[in-house]
View 1 (spheres, helix red, strand yellow):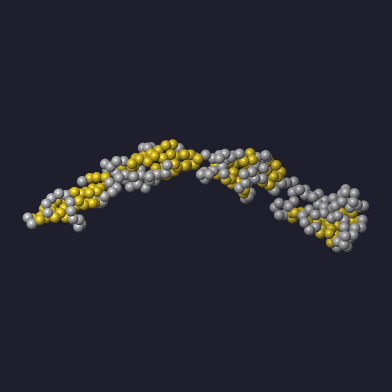
View 2 (cartoon, helix red, strand yellow):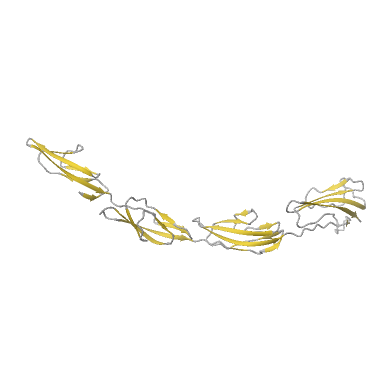
Length: 300
């Protein structure tokens, strides 16, 4: 007997006397759920008679898949129904799993012997994301701040890298380059399906023209003109200054970068008119310290 079922089947016997089955069953019926050879015996006072039947039970085919799968552009999805048996896919393959790289409607047919086949239908969709951005400037002189404008489509996450080891996850970041070089700005845009796309642009930054301006005179006379003595360098990361009197005593030391001397002594009194010496230390973007010595004239 060759049959298909996912549930137990009944074997029926007829005869005279006591009917018994191998395995201990008594009566004219026996419920079986496994393939095999089953023996039945009928006995009475006249004797014993027996018969057997070969039972082959095939599981009904059943294949279950998700109704929808998502692929990213340029990638593929592997569909594996974990079915032990014969499979026929709508793209013509008969393997146990299939790799699909195109969006569309698909199906797979599961078969087992002569049982009624089972069919599962599913859809493969391509997820869409485009990374794109514009720059307000691709050349300039350090220090320069660039403001990328993010024009990506269908993205919910962003990862920027600016070619100098710095990164950002903002939608519209800003980036300041403090030294020259050729830098590659990379934007990775990611959508809700974790698909990604990449956009790249190059920027060229010239090194800052490292010039330190130190005046030779100032007039702290409260006329709001030339009131403070200080060094200026737009390329510097730090400027510290010390002023000395004629005896070599430090009468002013800057406590912060770029701080200037207003002509007052430490006790708050005005320094006398005259010549003073200075030491200025200017740090560049590469942490090199440039030292300047000179004379500053305090005038009224």
